[in-house]
Length: 220
Length: 134
Image (cartoon, rainbow over all chains, first blue to last red; front, side, top):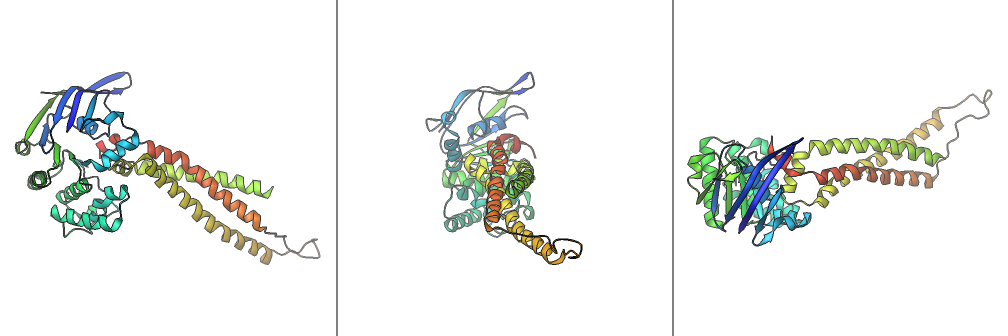
C-alpha cells in the first residue's frame, strides 16, 4: 500500500544541515500492524509525518496505492489526509473546547458531511473504543487513556485505510498503554485498517506483525 | 469630507483587527495544525479567520451606529448654549442616511480587508512544528 523509496530529510539550523532521514526504503502492506522502534532522534516521527504528508521529504518519493504523494496539490493532500489516513499523536491533540463526541465528529465535519449522520457514526465509534459513557465529556474531564481513545475514534472516523500513531502510549501508564495497544490490535483485525505505530515500548512492539528498527535515520 | 475622516478613523481601528487576529492565529497554532492534520484545506482555514474578522467588524458596526446616534442625540439635547451670548442655541446635527450607510459599508469592507493577512498566515502554517511539542 505504501512504498517509500530512498527518502532523505534534513533540517537546516542556520548554516548547519542536520540529516534526519538518510535513505529510507520501506514498504507497508494493507492490513499490517507495523511497529517502528528506535532511539529518540532516529527519525521515527519524521518518517511518520512524511508518510502522512504533514512534512515533505528533501528527496525521495512516497507512493500510496501507486500514487505519488508529493506530486499532489495542497488540496489533494488535504483530501488524502481527510479520507485515507488517521493520526494519533503522543499528546492527544483533541480540541479542548469540544466534547468527546464533537472531537470524534471533526474529520467528517471538515469534509462537510451531514452533521446528524456524522453524530450517529461517531457515537458508534466511541462505543467501539469503550467510551460510550463519556460522549459529552470535554478532553479535560477525561483520563489520559480515555483521551487517547477519543483520538483513536477521531482517527477512525473517516474509515481510513491507514492509521499513523506517533507514540500513542508514550504518555500513558502501563495499564492504559496496553489497553490502547490491544484496542489497535483489535481494530486492525476487525476493520482491516493498517496501523503504523511508533513506540518505545518493547513489550508492545512485540505484539505487532512486523517491527521496523530505525537507527540514525536509516532502517537497521 | 466627513466621510473621508470617518474612513480614516476606521482604517486606524482596523489595525486592531489585524493585531487581534494575528494574536488569535498565534494562539491557535496547535488547533490549526490539528485541523490540517485532519485534512482541512488552506481555503477552509483561511475562511475561519476571515469569518472571525468579519464578525468583529459586523459587531463593531452594529454597536457603533446606535452609539453614534445616541451621542448625537445627547449633544443636541443637553449641550445647549446661552442664546444671548451665542448665535446658535445648540450644535447643529445633521445625519445623512447615505453617510451612515457609506461609513457602515466601508467599516465592514475595511475589516474584511484587515482579515486577509492574518488569515493567510494561518492558512500557510506548517502543521509539523506545532504538533511536535507540547
